[in-house]
Image (cartoon, rainbow over all chains, first blue to last red; front, side, top):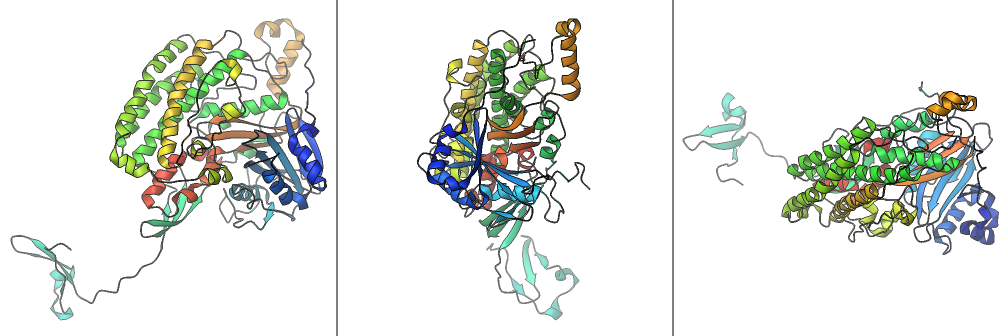
Amino acid sequence: MPPVAPLQHMDPETHPAVQRLRATMPQAIEGVSAHRDQTTVRIVKDQWIAAAQFLRDDPDCKFEMLMDLTAVDYPARPQRFDVVAHLYSLSKNHLLRIKCGVAEGDSVETLVGVWKTSNWLEREAYDMFGVDFAHHPDLRRMLLPQDWVGHPLRKDYPLAGY
Amino acid sequence: MDESRELVRVPQEETNMATRAGIELHGQDSAAKLILSEEPAPVQEQELMLNMGPQHPSTHGVARILLELDGEIVKKAIPDIGYLHRGIEKIGEYRQYNQFVPWTDRMDYIAAFTSNLAWVQTVEGLMGVEIPVRAKYLRVLFSELQRIASHLLWLGTHVMDLGAITVFLFAMRERELILDLLEMQTGARLTLNAQRVGGFPKDIPPGFLEKLAEFVRVMPGHIHEYERLLAENPIFLRRVKGIGVISAEEAVQWGLTGPSLRGSGVAYDVRKARPYAAYGPEFGINFDVPIGTHGDVYDRYLVRMEEMRQSVSIIEQAAKLLPDGPVMTDDIRVALPGKEALMTSIEAMQRHFILSIYGLKPPVGEYYSAVECPKGELGWYIVSHGDSNPYRARCRPASMINLQSLPIMSEGAYVADVVAAIGSIDIVMGEVDR
């Protein structure tokens, strides 16, 4: 049987946005990683909005579009949730994933002032995970009824509900 | 005020049982007199909160939009979604990667093939699976067939909401041709389950390409037929020109993608920006992506009509360039071994057993991949911890993100314009709510 070649991962330091972040706001980077041709930057939570604004406005980054914003639950970690945002630059045609860790009960700054589309995306992350987005103009449930109890996409929420 | 009616005030004691109802018929010309028994109240004004949906013929599914109205003018439009929420992303954490494909059918159920494709493509990206060339061309062929089918449904329902009811059945008639082709391949018309990780579960049947050629032959004439009914129709034009305008800057800020974004003049199409399947220039399929200018309902209509024509051309090219070969990869991490290997090699039998029972296992990692579905950029973000099931399966729902811009398009406009705007965004609630 033919052997399967191991996966090749790009060097995340070669991504232009990583280079610009390292040069301009290195304090915002908690870590970088890559999987195949995609780079992920872990941002320090307190620098979340500053990094987002930089990534949108810096001429070498120019991430005009927030493609998606969601959360992932790691219940074993003290910072239980990862808020994950996918940024895309129309002018440079590059993609970047940024994420930051948020503990349960803690909050992360809203990106509504940077990309308007995060309004509903953050509402859905709040609805499904219970992540609090500070200064969000309208943080209420998106998909579930307003009187729903619990956050279904958390790992401790049963698949069939209660 | 109609001359045959006059308001007559009659003192309370003179009203009898017959006139208590308030209407009295007089003489041969039977003019009705509206009789009030007391002083009319002064006229009051208040803003009306109108609930449009979730059951409504024009919301294209179970969408509820609260409209704060000042007469006919919309002061605020607040979409309230979630009526079709089924927890598909949570289910994704409890199913193997190939088992999950039928759930993607049920998200964008108007364009199930592109929904299937977005999912399997992300898994293939996560794992670094190469798919055979024939499968790439077939993916383009079916994606474009699905794009036409979706745009036909959009056209029919959108203009039916605006009053042009004839076009609806004309569009459905052509959609039947496409559904017949999809049924030949998958056995289903709507929820196709047409893709597996690594390619197609089976090749196109004999007779498919001939039927496809017949479709390609007749379709441009039908598109022309729809335009003949609409392009110079003054009622249609009054309902769509200058309505539901969104600027390019706003559209980009709100994350609009697809024809809704291109109608505002932003040249972004996933097929051109991050080519997948056989859309890359090296595969020899040439096509244009129409871009609008005004960002109104009319431009979005024109963009989709032209996209249908371009799709016909792409299908024709893909069918002509279609190479021979397998339609499923031979990557041993995802593909079942063939019957011959299964029956002659013990390792193949072990592999078949492990893949069938436990499913394929991607490496630890995360990946985002998107396709240009008829509504916009449909992407999946998968986080894998090396198991048979995803750790997180997140859909980037083109329709939901597009719907977010509805208030921008409809505030300050009439209620009738909200109907036009919803139709022009082209949403499918299965994808909005998941």
